[in-house]
Length: 309
Image 1 (cartoon, helix red, strand yellow):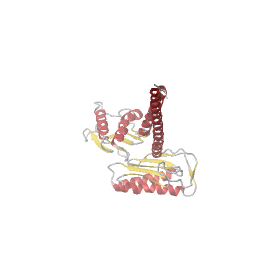
Image 2 (cartoon, rainbow, N blue to C red):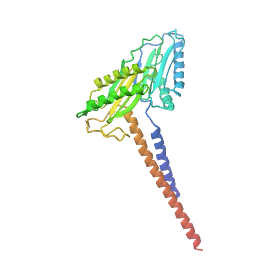
Image 3 (spheres, rainbow, N blue to C red):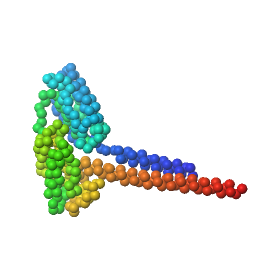
Image 4 (cartoon, one colour):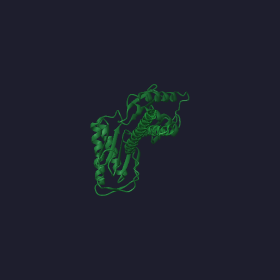
């Protein structure tokens, strides 16, 4: 094998390895889900509220490096220039991924709500952050903020019962999982989470409301996401089994395949990354064998050359 051929193989392998590394590390945590923006702006000409908001952002971003939930207030609690806020990351995120997600939200709020809004909330795929000035009317824990039902529809006996059972599993899961649950039931991937400072009984009550919303709003959709003020639930049905779980689909037929759910997509990304990683390993092994073969051939030719004298 000539040097230029070996160089081409090395560059090819390096390219595959680089793309594999980036594919396996890319998780769409910062995908935008929804926003909530107050119409009013800060009222104080001194700009104290704006400074308090910046300070709040800095504190929340810093805390997101060590915990998945944190709430605080900046400024004097007795003054309307004070700003209170919190963030929460999905329960399965590492501190590093949580920080990556939370850091994205202040600039997102600036973009979708504008500056100096007295209250705002932005939900990304992996986290959310909300804030309001002290004295802003609080929302009910079970107020519906956003819903999204997949365009895909399922047909066949037992589908509704399957979804009902899967959603019911979330209620039981958050009760025993300290406010967070992710799992699967007969090819349905489900996820639910409550705000970090919500008590167990209130968490279960909130999730029950979210589940009822999902049942009534999404009907026979093969996926759905329901976000309330202090909790959210999502589900995605996979006719061929949840990716990576090895479960079967149970024979229910689906129409469109678009789901609108984010959690299954993350599992699919991991599967694709594993496949690409396997291919990269195969190419590396082939390249190694080719280089070995070339070296052996050169060694043999060298011995033959000296043996002629």
